[in-house]
Length: 118
Image (cartoon, rainbow, N blue to C red; front, side, top):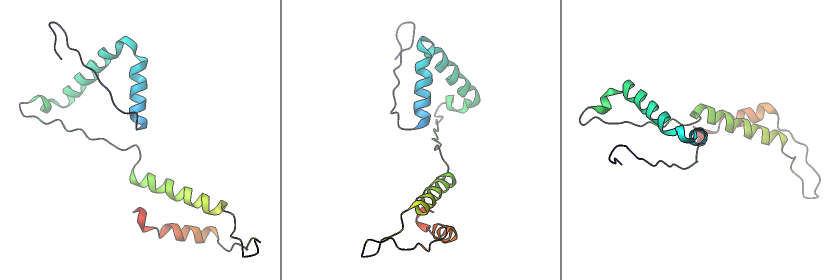
């Protein structure tokens, strides 16, 4: 909003990603210097992307995820593998533990066949 001799804006966003929390905490730490930092950041963006200032120019905002699909897959596989290796062996009808015949190679093969995550 433009007033007589200055501009006034209010910003807010949900703290739903690590990046949003990081930016929020950083801006909060700036105290009364937030405005100058935002002004500097937007000026730098406009200098890098002058096409957005053209009449009818489009501002394209691309949100990059914190993790790539490959990183998510690695994390999921690691967690599944860890859980399966550390899992208690199944019990038989009498409550006695059955001998586990699952090897780490078996787990690797099973995890490599999980098409649902691809």
